[in-house]
Structures are given as C-alpha cells and as structure tokens.
Image 1 (cartoon, each protein chain N blue to C red):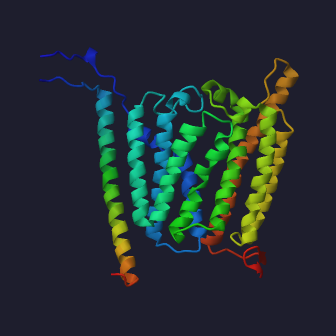
Image 2: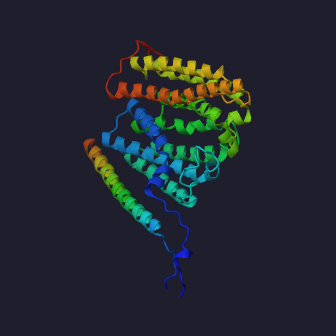
Image 3: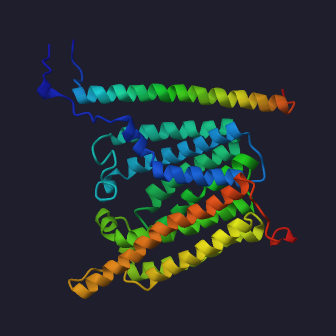
Length: 329
Length: 50
C-alpha cells in the first residue's frame, strides 16, 4: 500500500471553463462573427435564418479553435509579453497539450457543422482559414519575417468571404473586396500597436516591423497601407455593393483614418526613448498618435461593416447612380 | 490499490465545473445538430427534393 499523503499531490492545473473560453479569443471571435454575418447578409444568395445563425456560430467556433491552437503554439512568447502573459497557458492555469486537443476538436466540429448547415465550399474555406492562421501565420510567418501580419492578415480577412460562401456557395469580386479591406486594414492596425508595444515584441523575439526596421520605416509603411485601405474601403461603392449610407461612411471614416495615419507619420511614435525631458515629451506625444490610430482603426472597420449590415439587414440600401459592374444607372 | 492522482479541493471543484460545461456543450451540440437536420429536411421538402 502506498501512502499518498497531502504532501504528495499531483500539480495538475485547476482550469475552469472560463479558461477554455479565454483560449477562443472572444474579442477576435466577435469581429469574426460580425464580418462573417455582414458577408452573409450582403451576398446575393439566400439562407434560412436558423441555418444562417448556425453557420455563423460554426464560423465563430472555427475562429475560436484557431485562437486556441495559436495559444498552444505561442505559449512561450505569450509568457514574455505583458499583453499576453495572463493568458491561461502562460499563467499556468491550463496545460498546453489540453489547448491543442481542445483546438483540434473544435476545428473538426466547426468545419463539419458548417458543412452540414451551409455547404461544403464554405466548410472547406473555414478549414483552410484555420490552417492558414495556425500553420502559415503562427508557425511559419510570425517568428520569421516583419511582413508576418501583411500575409497573415489574410486569415482575419477570410470570414466575410466564408459568410458570402454560406449564402452563395462561392465567391465573387464583392466578397474579394470585403477580404481586401480587412487584409489592407490589418498592417496599419497592428503596426500602430507594435509602435508603442515594440519593447514587448522585442522581448519575445517577434520580428515586428518596428523591432526589425525601426519606427520611421514603420510609420511610412503605416501611411502607405492607410492610403490603400482608405481606397479599398470606397471600392464597394463603385461595384454597387455599398449604397449611399456606405458611401458616406467609407469616405468620411477613410478621411479620418488618413488624418490619424498622417499624425503618426509626422510623429515620433515608437522612437527610441531618450533621457532628455524634451524628447521624452515628444515620444509620449508620438505614442499617443499611434494609440489613437490603433483605437480608431477598430472603429473604422466596425463602421464600414456596420453600414453594410444596416443597408442589407434593415433594407436601407439606396443605390449610387453609377457602378463599375452594371455601368451608369 | 488506492494509487492514483490525489486532487486538491480546488482541483476537484474545477473538475466538477469542467464536467458541467462539457455536459452543457454536449447538450447544445445535440440541439444544434437536431436543428440543422430539421431545417435541412424542411428545406428539402419545400424544394420538392423529398
């Protein structure tokens, strides 16, 4: 008989359901749900409301599964960054192997559920998105190149295309435009964050652009991508996907995006801190510009997709009297 | 033989809560599969497939 006393207890993490929920990155999931829903609503096809809701749930589940797999793979660098060190695995509340099993299980369930509720093109697209985020971005690009989020941004840009595929069974130019908006939006969004969190990324050894190429190069890249996303944001008006409301929102929000990107461009955001008080003041002021752009970039994307949701969901679509696809009305 | 992992009170509590969450998740999954099946069959019937 062995004597297993209280001093010989197995150090098993006491994970709560909330820790498993945190693995799914609920905030990222909410953006995925929102953009996928807009893609589904704006598409010309039709889908039964209950099956549509289940399809969006399946897409959300797939996004959560990808988040769990990302946390499994990135646990080592998450532990080194102040922004991520309280996540369940680096905090010691959950085993990495449990996150892996949870993520793989949810991936299979999400893909099969989407196939059953919608169609197998959308399901295949979801499977590819999970693969892209976990294998191409997390395992391949994130630790190797400062262009990690430029290419990896595609993973976050696929959900509206998946939503579109749920409705139509395929993709077209308008679903590609929704993809392009998010893809081009991703670099200025994350580079603005990386400008004032560069120390975090440097400590974790993640080659974000400000860490590898410096703040000035990053500010230039932010400006270029901000111009591109502002143009891409207006393109749905020209194809007829966006109506009057979308046109007003995309032009107004795009202009504000450019102004805030310009502020970052002319600031000292992310520059090396010096001991001099004058420079210190300028750097703080510069970081404020990057913080403002980061915060507004979220509002920008929300406004664009919300405008489409209102136009298609509430029947408030009023066509612009010209578009590139059908010509002058 | 009483060899095995001895859980602390905290671990026992969290295990119970995880078990409850798995139960709820399983129930929700069955409900979702039922709804998908029901509405797919209804759609098929409406389209004259069935």
